[in-house]
Length: 479
Image 1: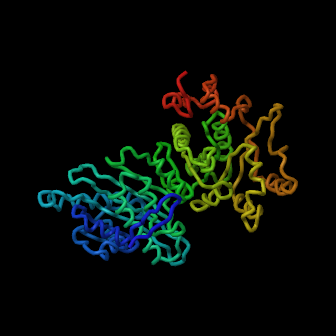
Image 2: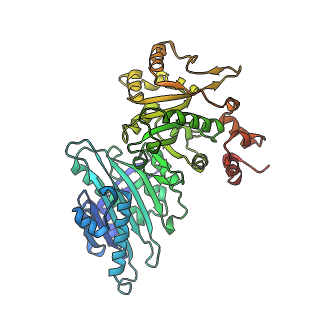
Image 3: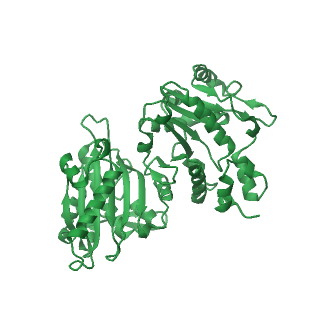
């Protein structure tokens, strides 16, 4: 059975899960193993039930007992089993076994694969909804020596373990089908992972493609697709520029976050970072080794004037921030309180937000909170949660005066609320800033770069201008 969706311009048929599994099963050259830990054998069940599975499934297993699992795949640090490392060990081990046990003389045309997942479903107390790692390592040519690999991290949204298992089985089937029949269209492959799955059932917050058939795939752009498609609310890049699981970076950390356009990153941005970081480390119970700095860009900030996301512009910004050794978060959170709520998923430690004083004006604008039943009070209750503090960088006005928290003007209805948070120490001014750079604005630097106006190199951090010139970022052209 196929489901037909009506789009704006064309009709698109979505094969049923049974049809997908059956198409794989009836391909005489696709052959491999299934190793599923933590949520039943829900993916391989789809292939057994579709029929013709004997030509596809070499082995299916679930090593639930930790002692058995360790004996097969090795032990794990800190006794954690739902990790990317565990998934990769599973994929490597199973591929190695199938190659060692099956002779190419007997299986000359087989395209081997190993599908694996390691998952924790919702607990009995329903405090933790569960998450997992899912992946496939596979060939699309029997003579291919280097395997392709797709790995992804999921977070369950359903509150019933059985439903989570069923959703996982659907996702696994979609992944295997897409890996073989949509590998040359990775953006479409990504969308098809949600065939027969609603976005309120499952979140995919990290995905990585590797191997010969994905050598031209930029995983950062694929992460951007996760956001564009509504599959997740935030994705993260490590200083090396690679995708990283947010939970791994943020777990039980003190967090200091900076939101900006960073188009491009300027000396003001870095001064704000350095000054607020010094202040944050002086806070009670904030240890340097337990502190994570995050540079965040909202999805709305990435959109071009036409409403579409400029992917090249996105790449330019992320590349520069990572080159400065920073961890970058791209989020779907227009309001600051949503960003704080997101961080609270992973840590209860101290948090700080550093921003220009002009951004604080938006924070105290009621229009952003009309959708909340509790309005601005509900939003601020979430924003200034427990140990959260805002560090404010001054703004230079056209008449050469400074705007700080002491003379910032907010709407009369917000004045008392503003005073409450200011005089309770929830908002503090950055005072040891560099006064010589206050006239630097990203939009000004961007315009100078794109129009060829000289002097912009002095407005950005050391080394960044060379990257912009070498890689012709932000419309730079050799003059």
